[in-house]
Image (tube, rainbow, N blue to C red; front, side):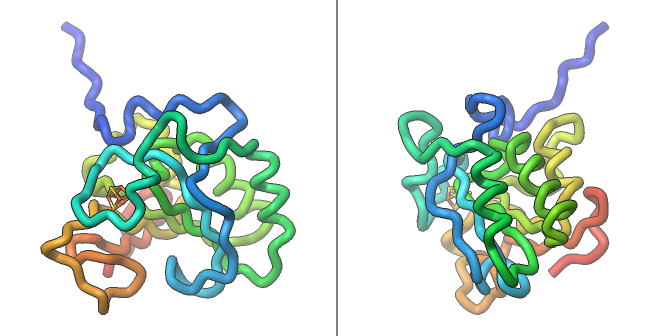
Length: 180
Ligand code: SF4
């Protein structure tokens, strides 16, 4: 008997992007203080399958004929030029839809630039399949802000997130070591 692989359509299949490229929904940001601790670079990915009512970035949802295709080498080159950043945050859109590209960039930031790595996801941590490329990316993170934006739980006083269901999960090789 064969067991059916558990998948989550929010991150599987991955977005159809050629190897060596990432689809971005906006310009690379730097010196951001609202997407994690310290001054941070922010990479805005294209594509999201959540359709949260009240989403502030619906233009990031489309997976085709939208966004800007950039080579990962070019992204690394631009990141290397930034001064005084303590980390990078992956925002979206849904970064886990392009987990392979995000993983390569995250490793570069940690290993070559000495930065810490944060990411947002609209998925709930417990629903990310452990045999997926999305999980490989999660294992590289220092923190994951998880969960969709839920308008009825919107709270402007929260640090780094928009609704009360979203958690800041501090991770060590994918394992939660602390949460806010
Ligand atoms: S997960 Fe984020 S980008 Fe996607 S629809 Fe929800 S709020 Fe918008």
